[in-house]
Length: 503
Ligand SMILES: [Zn+2]
Ligand SMILES: [Zn+2]
Image 1 (tube, rainbow, N blue to C red):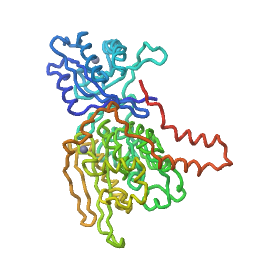
Image 2 (spheres, helix red, strand yellow):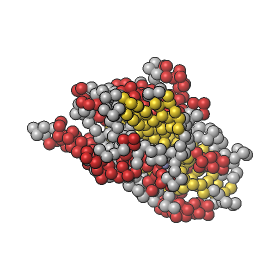
Image 3 (cartoon, rainbow, N blue to C red):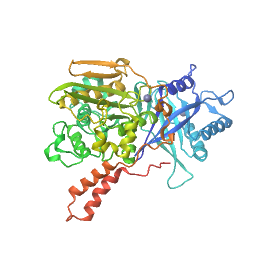
Image 4 (spheres, helix red, strand yellow):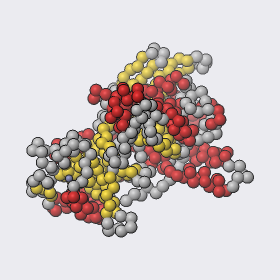
């Protein structure tokens, strides 16, 4: 079933609430434009810009109403900017809001005109007095094309340095397990636990760090996971991957970790989507857009570039980390080991400006050059690329730091959501906090919140991922086995390739 969500930046949110929550306590309204941001099973909107009413555009009399001229003006703005149109109003009570009969009539009337003019569905939003938002899309009825049906959103997210979400209790029921999560709940209370259980978390890359992040999140009570990795378990992974054992060699990492999460999870209801693709492939890219928060546990430049794009264009906060181990000249002793962790996205510096990948290396990887051993020799190791040396204790520390950054972002203890970029130096046992900004002409600042309308396609063909999946299918299906069986496996691999045209 399709899921719906809305994202609002804190700047736009402040402007909206300043207008809608009146000092005289009366309801008010306005229009805004939005950019669509669609994932695999989730459709989203990013509210972009307000279209405030002018003198005489609306009548405020307890129940607020607007003039046709205002609606027409708003439609024109949306059309001109090739954006969707949102209608927003306030209610004099707190929390997630339902709709009055008048609300339903007003939005039902607007829905066909908005679809006709913008090719995108009308988005309705209601603000409560506490700043909580509720939202719904009006989509064409599949059977009767002229009729429009209301689809409630699961959540409305407000993203600043921190991520605050109003959840729709009817669609995302709050849950926790009093017995299994006794100690966790005693640390931050059941309301925080309920909100954590309703997040959808994506882990991109299930290597040493990603597999530990998965284990920590499962124990902490996270309930909705999306796992993205095309790779298979190899013998050399066994010293670093959590919950991965000898008899898993040759299996897909996403499936092995999916089973591990279901075993370790403490939440009452857990869903894990296993996506055996690279985030640089269409299937992986859209699976990532289904998530509220992403963990970037990859060390390659191309996936990092794609993840960076998602963080800014689609406003999905990303927790990223990297480990760099240095050995002495003869490679016989450890000279240094440092690991960095950072949350990137809106109002924070991006992975490219932080030096976590180089754009030219992303291009090289896309072209296949980075998988050419003769080319690799000449690469600068300090760029945290192809630094294969690693020790389980280093990854464990980094994985824990990454989850801590996510908890700061979402639970904002004492109001602190951003702890900065942290760098831990193993040799001297010290952690530094680094303050950085994006370069003035950073490309990613120009696409903030543009969602699907950037006009840029960041995914493409990924030869290594394709070959790995082929290898996997060949390894499990001997020539004697039926064609039907092979097709079944292929079908499960294709599960993530769906038509993403939504409206
Ligand atoms: Zn209302
Ligand atoms: Zn930047």
